Image 1 (tube, one colour):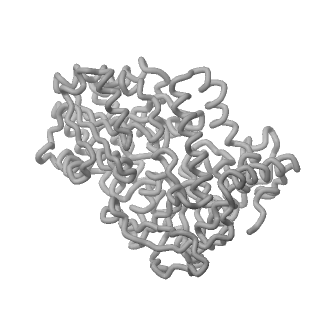
Image 2 (cartoon, one colour):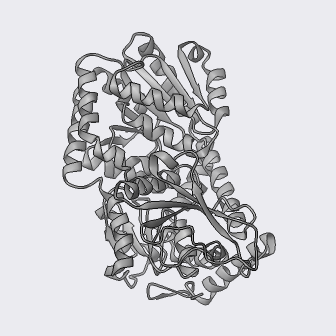
Image 3 (tube, rainbow, N blue to C red):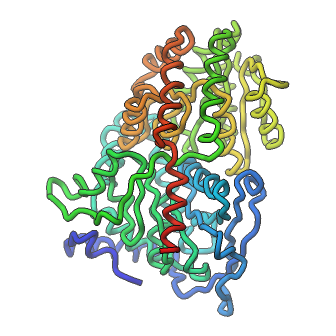
Length: 496
């Protein structure tokens, strides 16, 4: 296992930073143990939820077994590992985009969630940090003071520093054992930095680190892997490690360690951009209810903003001027709290709860114009399973007119978007990028500005028309081809 903490892309870390990183690892070892010598048998099986639609095979780890050997259940010729964690919904969604692209290109995507192996030190370390991040997200949505003094600075500058990456690299050494019996020559695409770092420490030969955000942060560095970014802004920032050690001018990332690919988007969404945008404009021209999709992320933050939007939209929904999809993911309590807060919501709502076939049927009919094709009222979606909870938004996205979301991973998706207030300073740059390429609004920093934008979407034609036209132009320019390119790069590394 090579040392990745003392020097990062040619930039030496101080002894103090190194000692702090070592102490961080020791803290987790003391709390969760050290399974570096454990031998976990590996098996694969078809994912029960997105196996058919995205071709996904799950990578499963058994209990430690000294006689375990490298698994032969992988397709070593066509296989590609999608390494991820559940931390909110974003990294899962990007993983689904990579899997979708891989399937469309004839490859077999293997889903390896490092936050799902509950008996391993790897998962215990990730879960502890995930719990802290989710808590911070929820508090930041309720406390302006916490957001200003703690959450924004941490997400904007704290995660930006090379010193943070140094500690992460040391902690990731505890995650490497989960890869021990995975064939080392299967390419890995990681949609969070920890699966990339762990893969490098474990000796995986061909690792691509698909960076999710538009704000360059050392948090996302995994030296030894090929880093890909979705925007040219991010490319320049990462290339010179901009601001990652105060005002110091740092040694840059090697040219071959970083590539711009474009946005990581599912094949189904990219392939159907023109027809989906045409249907949006046709509905607008014909005076059909404008369809808004509200998606509440895994942290469950910003519920008060969504409540204000729903209250504002209910009169328009009753008048047939608007319709609403609400996906609360796997957080049923969020819907129950909305019902309590907005008593009239239940009267105009249809619940599509924990029935994936019904959700798929609704999404298809809403798109094709059959059955539920003329969507009216409010349609609420909740699924207990995480795959269904996340992918529900992707299904509904095609038939919605406007996606209402914070500017996180969804900022890059090819659908007209209304951005509500961010959670964490790094997200602001997703909204800025989207507004600049014309497929989303500016970030609405408060509820009055959010409602103003909704009013414009309903009453005017130009806002929707402009975004739809820009989305089609962006597709022609290859802006949404990132997932395909990431898969190409991963497989090309193997054949070089």
